[in-house]
Length: 188
Image (cartoon, rainbow, N blue to C red; front, side, top):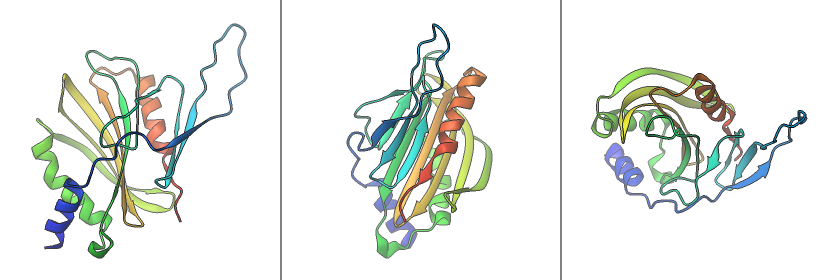
């Protein structure tokens, strides 16, 4: 029964409209002669997290169902994307990371055509247990790889997702993974 309520709560939760996070410029590196500087930013969200986004990633305004979204240059027919989604969970359900992991794992084969799980690892995000997944499948416009981190804290589910099309250059993959690695919880 708890799992059914959790499923309904998470799948029918109202979409977060627009980006509610605040951004602040990072300290710029020392400029090289003739080099144009595009500063990185750090997103400090009122939703209880921060994330650092290097130059080259463009904020996507008013992205549905996410707190923030960033895109990079087109690779093939798709753009690498990083999103942060925050959902409140009903306190009475006492949702655990294991509950979310099981729910997501059961839903993925329905949502991702030709799903191939590449790995799962338990990691820490700001001292809080989190799950890191890597998987591939068919996305809109071609084969893609998802790298996803999710954690639960104070009745909030945080999901950070990097989507990269097949053929994404290594430096862009590293940049996207750096964004995921910078994700930190700021709520107590």
